[in-house]
Length: 381
Ligand SMILES: Cc1ncc(COP(=O)(O)O)c(C=O)c1O
Image (tube, rainbow, N blue to C red; front, top):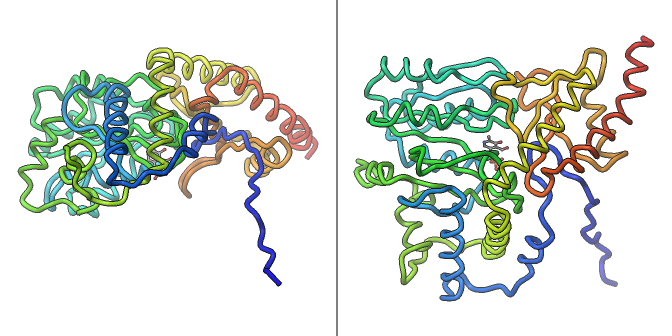
């Protein structure tokens, strides 16, 4: 008798947390196309198409652009492991969970980390980063999070990049929640290493980390005293992704590459500016409506990020219970605070195909339904 094993049956969810977001149907369809081998010349043409579209998404005409086969965190680690060598100094803006993570990984790379901190909901002022650079003129790297998903804060990255122009330091930017959702011009701004991931505003499945690397950063990598970790060796990866004939480095995630190809095609077909405007409209609509309901947003309004809104949980309300009811009664996922230090919050993401007024209204209606009795209970006790 054959054993009865459960078949895969995940429920439908509207993914409006900090990511992953829902995947567009045509992106899922792309993953059903015929599987190719990683050394098939036809696949190598597809890789070049992905790189070309990614260049346009990053707006990075020069340098190296490719997607790493890894998470956003590993894209962060790849940048630090390539750009830093033990004993070098890195100035890291820490205004949330992911800024802290950059500092921690840089330390593990053997760097001396100068952390410039800001409270939850604030952006680290660029002047303070520049002051630290004046104090540590030999610093190799400045690292910031463009879109801090743990707080909903957008760092003024273009302004920082302009301030750093002409200075002998590399700029690394975490663009995990900004690529494809927020204005970003890696080439013109002068970002030396930008990394993102596929599951946020690009709205593809998680598992790949698109990166953009400037000529200056490549020069730096070529002149390292010690080679970077093999899996993150950008110069070896270039030989597979871009140079022809392609040289084997690892077995590429073929179906994830198809998904990214389609996600990038959708992004460019819509147009970058139109996509940014759509995220801005949807996020702005959600934020206004939340404030009208008397809810308080965590981020400094001057630096409010569009694709991610962090809302403080009002006193007397159990934030986790609300999250659970949104999920189980309404099929909507929203996030909570990230890490033990975070204040109580809900994190609402409107990313990719979910960056619409309709989706924002669906989330608001679900909050209204869940919070009405909660609010009654809070006032009754
Ligand atoms: C700003 C930011 N950086 C890095 C990461 C890490 O990405 P991953 O979870 O794919 O490792 C995330 C994930 O949410 C993020 O929001």
